[in-house]
Length: 144
Image 1 (cartoon, rainbow, N blue to C red):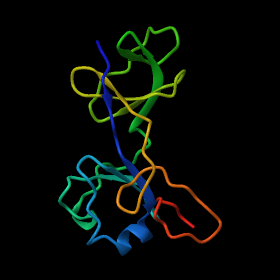
Image 2 (cartoon, helix red, strand yellow):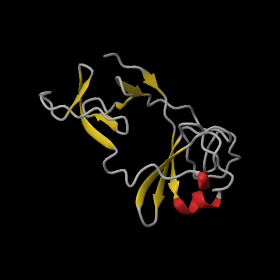
Image 3 (spheres, rainbow, N blue to C red):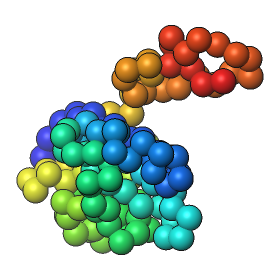
């Protein structure tokens, strides 16, 4: 099997902050919104490009079993280093290769690597955010 590159967007904050913008924030199609909830721990919503945060449903009961850590070898994911115990290929899981820290998902036919490179954030586009301890004007995606 071959691997293909894909880009996945992740956004993470607590439920208090998301609820402030719940009727105006529209996550992009495929954008994963991680929510640190006060009562249920880490939860996730996935944007469709037109529904607001408030309209989106959580896509999981909890994330403890959403990611599997193992060993990617010869197009398959294994539970151990000697590659004799396969993980089942499931489309609703994220797979983390322990030796390389690369992240994959299974698209129903093959494992696809998720890109870990992101652009810098701006006041319009999400991405890597720079943190400063002085005031700024936030034109380069920085947070004070």
